[in-house]
Image (cartoon, rainbow, N blue to C red; front, side, top):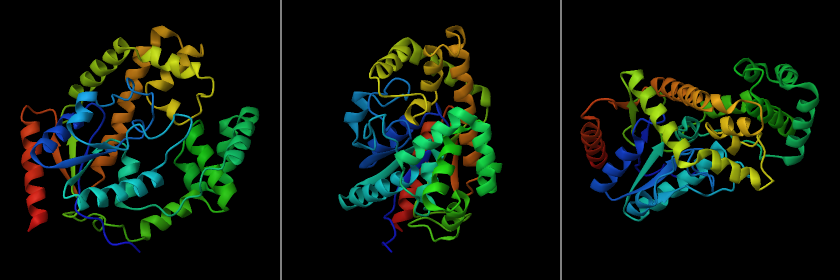
Length: 325
C-alpha cells in the first residue's frame, strides 16, 4: 500500500460556477499546478463545447490532464484517480501546491474514496453488447442487467445506454456485479483522504455553489450561446468528418456534443438545439450540486455573491495555512 498523498487543494462546482477564475486567482497567490478534474477536457479536438481554458490561461499556470486522449478512446474514473495521484506526488515533490479543479464528481469520488480495481474495457465484449442493443433495444439490455446486478439496474434509467453497457461489460468480463466492486471500494481505506463524513484537512474541497439557481441558469444559457457563436456545430462537424467517431462514444455523449450530433444525424431539429443544449447543461449542473451537497467535508462558497472570489481566496489561505500547522 502506497503512502498517503501529500496535501492538495480541490475546487469543485457545477458547470458555469466560476471554477476557472477561482483556480487562476488561487494559482496567482500560491505556486500551483492545476490538475483538471473534467471528463470532457481530457479529449483532444474538443475545445469549444468543453469550455477548455484559453491558450493564455494554460500558459499562465501549468495544467495537467487536458488534451490527453483522442475522442475515440475512453478515459475513466479509475484512470483519473491513478493519474491524479501520481501528479499530486510529482507536483508536491517540485515544491508546488497541487490544485485540482473541475466538475466531474465521479473523478473526485474515485480519488477521495478509491474504487476497487475495475476490469479494463474489452472492445470485443463492448461490441457484442452494442450489437445486442441494436437488435433488442436498451430497455431489454437493462432487463438483462437487472437479472445479474439488480442494485446497479435499480439506479439506472432503461435508456441509459452508456452506464448499462458498462455494467454489463463488467459482469461479462469479470463475472462480478459492478455494484459489488463499488461496495468493496466504499469499505476500503481511502488513500490520502479523510474518513467519510469528517472534516478533511489533508485534501480540503472548496465547493462553489449558487444560492440562487436562476443565476446559474442565466450563466449556463449565456455560455451555451457563446459556444454556438464560437462554432460548436462546426467543431462537431469536423469530428464527424473523421469517419471513425460515433454517437455512442463517451466523448460524443458529452453535454453539447450529444445534442449537436443528434441534430446532424437528423434525429432532432436544429431549431431545438439551443433549448436542448441548455436544458441538458442545467440537468448536469443539478446532478453536480446534488453530489456536492452530499459531501459533508466541503467548504461552501456562495459563488453568486459579489465577494465570491475574495471569499474563495480567504478560504484557500486558511486551508493552506492549517495544513502547515
